[in-house]
Length: 353
Image (tube, one colour):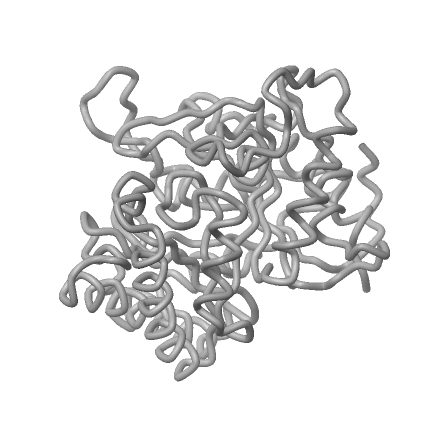
């Protein structure tokens, strides 16, 4: 991978929530969370041939950043990030029931709780902009429900989720924010590429509500996990012919690419993983994992360029997402140098000035 810095945009960010996702609890393999200050230090310390991360994306939930943070709390956060030469981009709204939210297809009370968490996240986003630490990025959401519950009434539940998303969109617009729904097999109504597209069409707020495309999660869509009816790759697919997977990704991208508002660079080995309280989803692998199936710059380009090969500029930054790695891996400086190198290769191939 070339690490020559060829472009200024998109900015390169690191996600902070891998310090939390799949951590905690007392089950087999349980590990303690990694605090935000440590995650910031690991990010700021990474450097490849003089190039560093530009910023971070933040998880608005304790023990990282309280969704009910005071103005003083947010000023401290902004100062902490700025002191390390970083900025803040996208924010994850904690829309799930255990964190104060509710199912987007649930009762009126649950759906109101979902929208309430989006409102708090958007308010924080605006305050961080006012503090000068955040100039781009979205608020990330999902349906906060599982595929099994959604399957009880697919059409009706999709309509409910879309209605909740429209309510959330109205809130986001009042704060000058946009929402990105995470395409991932563990979220009901979003657990296949076709169901995700149908949800976006039903929501019908293209200027405000789109998708967050994560390369690891989207790769699972081609295999039909949780939605075999929408599998693209054959069941006996031989990964030695990677061009077939890349063609399958192009099939998805033609449908989903117009909705992209946030993008995660990631690696995947075509398996699923769950940890702690997190449902099974696309396994995030390290960039150099020998079992990784994704040619990172090539597949990123399928999402970041249109069918004519023109860079879409759909997002001003790209973010590395690598959840459920062991803490010793997360704490290694070499991990973040390899991640940063992979991110630079994507920007070199698909960036702009």
